[in-house]
Amino acid sequence: MASCRVCRGELREFLDLGQQPVSDAFLEPDELDNEFFFHLQVAICGSCTMVQLVEEVPRERMFHNAYPYLSSGSAGMREHFERTARQFLATELTGPDPFIVELGCNDGVMLRTIGEADVKHLGVEPSGGVASLARAQGLRVRTAFFEESTAAEILDDEQAADVIYGANTICHIPYLGSVLRGVDTLLKPGGVFVFEDPCFGDIVAQTSFDQIYDEHFYFFTATSVRALAHRFGFELVGVERLPVHGGEIRYSLARKGERTPAPAVAELLSEEESRALGEVATCRAFADDVQHIREDLVDMVRDLRDRGRTVVGYGATAKSATVTNFCGIGPDLVPFICDSTPAKQGKLAPGSHIPVRPPEAFAESRPDYALLFAWNHAGEITAKERDFRDGGGRWIKYVPQVYVD
Ligand code: SAM
Ligand code: TMP
Ligand code: ZN
Image (cartoon, rainbow, N blue to C red; front, top):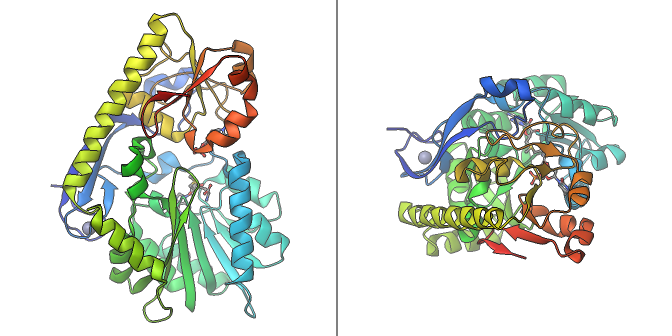
């Protein structure tokens, strides 16, 4: 029986998404024979309610020099992180020697604004390629995985931090105990640890099962984050809903007794309780909904193909690996996926081996339908591709259910 990575409690499995590849491992044609697969299964802890993957993919297989994801790839996310940085500058970073550490800073999308304000900062980013892009903008970045030992090294070399921040990174880290001990080492006594990740409540409400892939090891709720915080001497003092990446929560943790929890914390905890989000029965009902989405999506795409319509994919997201591999969607149904990320173009998508092509291929091929894998950027993409819709093209969406738009 597998046990919880946070508290060693008993795990209850509720969703099996089958054999899956590394979701950001785009392949050259000659790499197909050695592709790595793992068993993607999700479970909830019977003790602390933390939702998590059962199998861990070794971190070096996911985060390395060729990690292709670029945080600056969407205008919406660039704005979101600029706003975030300005908020930190106006609130937490106004003392005499302000210092912010960002875990998983990627290409520097958030730290750029901090650097421009001349505030001391450090990015911690294990993926060398994206870390270099941040450094090329004059930002200070350490190429490393953040954990307890990294925190001690940073404290030795730099100073204690007012803010430790991570966006779409903390839920990627199975060894959360080491991270929390590291935060305890590096944070100033009254400092704050802020992280934002996909909201499990929204995943259940929207049946957005494609949020589940190798990198997303944990699916947080306020309830499970509060239990995690207590275990390591912290308190959950803030929660904020964010309208990005399909619905996220920004959690703020401070050392016990240092800050008064905002009223929003108790409100969210009680909402989660009334929705029974910590119960395995709720998780199993979600798993049933996932099976229905799979059936509806496969039926629709096969039917269109059989009627001679063309369907291409839009956005070779990590999320799309779960959809294509779980639903058995390959190049016979979706001949290519277009994506603006240079490092994904010209390669084959993991597991499904659907070719990835630049966005120009979209207009040129004039498909009848486009399967929107990057549904979290829908507004930005449909505005950019207005000609497709004006010319009679239709979007296929599968969140919160399968429909044509
Ligand atoms: N913060 C950016 C954003 O929100 O767009 C990047 C998110 S990206 C999905 C996750 C990032 O976390 C990757 O750049 C990865 O290299 C980094 N990462 C993974 N494990 C890490 C760790 N232990 N410490 C710091 N960063 C880590
Ligand atoms: P994400 O959902 O993990 O942020 O990934 C979005 C993917 O979609 C990423 O590979 C970039 C791609 N993309 C486009 O191809 N065109 C766009 O306009 C946007 C916003 C993203
Ligand atoms: Zn647990």
